[in-house]
Length: 640
Image 1: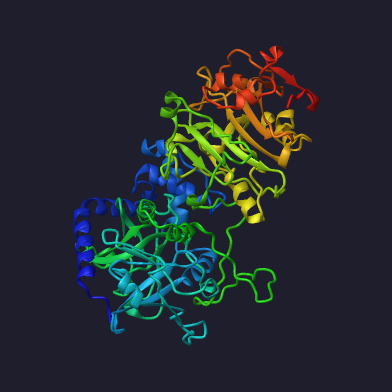
Image 2 (image 1 turned 30 degrees about the horizontal axis):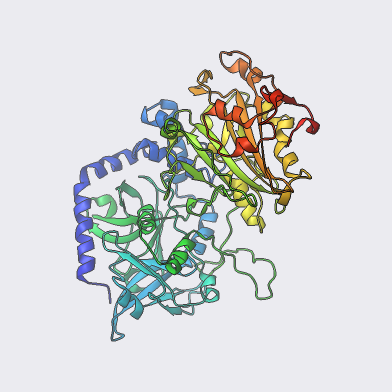
């Protein structure tokens, strides 16, 4: 009993019209995909570059490729991009066994939706997937309203086990009174499941990720589905994205009625779309004359972010960003080890490996201005001129839109210099964790245009290091180690680094220990500090590989003294002598390896930033002798 309603027909008609309008561009993209390396040409350069960067989160040997070079058709860039995409997303059917493990995990959250009417009669079938600990995602034409959802149920484990026998089915009613949101245009419905957390935990959930770069033209997709209302099945490998629209993806794959509401996954088992329609497509034999359409996940999340919800429902929606939990044995022991047993009989959700950046950017709270007890230390203020030069966070939901929040710190980028104007981090000495450093793997931030951040290209074959602005362990604190690990990993964004000579970056100077010294000062109340750091982006910085290299770096460190007073100190360091051989040297400012304490107002003058009340909290503010920089050789030289 398939879903055959006017709603579904309307969605198919709209999809068919979009498919017809895109026939020419789609066929051109398919032709490019047949060329060796053509996958690097079949989508927009910025999308190709963002996709490569995202793949780098899963494959340590993948390095970013400049979108400008791709757009210009630079032979080296096109060769590099094509080689990466052909190897990972190309036609080679050989995949690591981790792909199967990921599929087993992802498929557990997929269930069959039994659509029932007010009389309790079965009206049709659809597919749905848990996308949070309590919310199920399917199509609007499957669950068009709260009333229909209230009559319907979802069944998990409607499938055969590894022994070929049917698994025991678990059925749950839906709970639209607790949460229901839907939209006809984007053809989605999001509804709560009437079950306890313990009842749903074995199935896990597939998080929805707003970030771009999850799929481009040429990527293969996998759909886990209940075709025709039958047992759970999966369409593997011969399913390729052939067009990317503003709100939809077009792809070739095998689906049937009853597959409506199925999650569409990339090879990394990230949900890229919500399947909703299959339509004729001009007799294209390469995909059986049919084309399938899914609603892009980023558009669903954008729609939800823009809707007003009561506090109780907003709290449930916020949990879309929650990390899946591992199941634990009944005796409360250690998490169980993920093992593979096909097909689809495993329930355990694995945590991302250490050193991998969390791909969902919607759950970063960023720098906290109220972190220091009894005081508010806001982010530095930008003049109108600087605000116009700040790169925009394309996923921002509030003001100012140029702030990039991470776990325990924030960054503001200069879009022309492609470097941070500043970073701001909260450090909690009471709950800090000394995490082991994994192999470095740096990533671009998908919230910022790739043309507004420096990637790997400047660091090749020279003595330049990727110098952390927020130190790796500064934000690595929290009640649990996973929280600290997420913050640690976030520091490996290119937005948080600046080109620094390796001797400057690796030398253990006074600069490297400033935060630690202030944090552990005997006069520091509550063992907390807030640190703002950045490069001095001077107009006369010289060029190297198209980037102007900063010669000086600064810090402003704030703490609360035992008496409750705020103290703010500022520091300046230069690497000019060390970068002299890389570009044309300008006048000498400060010697290499020499750290200076300077008035906070001096940093404001150098950067054009406003530090609010911090200059008045500077112990150097009233001392005439501090009108020039004072070198810091030992801790005794610091004035706190």
